[in-house]
Image 1 (cartoon, rainbow, N blue to C red):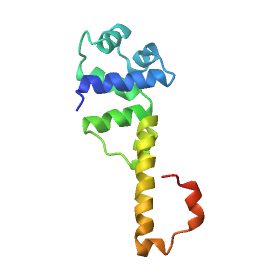
Image 2 (tube, rainbow, N blue to C red):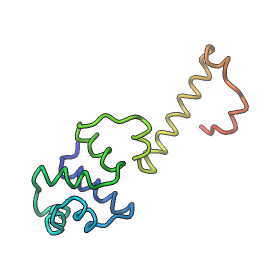
Image 3 (tube, one colour):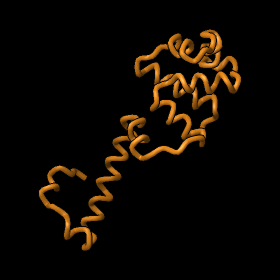
Length: 123
């Protein structure tokens, strides 16, 4: 499990990849840009208040993902998928496909199964 510093660093980096920059995050959070920079570079930890101010300044998907990793939030499956990376989404889709294939083999479910969907499912 990642520690709290790495969880926030990862969330900030994802926000930066998504189009924000560190100065915007620092300004929106009310944390000095140099404090954020030193934290992101692993040179100093930050106060709890600054930690959550930075977290609150991030886009919702990064904030929810970080809070979930910290064990501070419950999120729906949809929210998890929305915040997932491409590799995680690929894994989810493959799992759904496998489960769907297994459910076809269940006679109670297979009576409702429309075989025209087979061409759309490549598992």
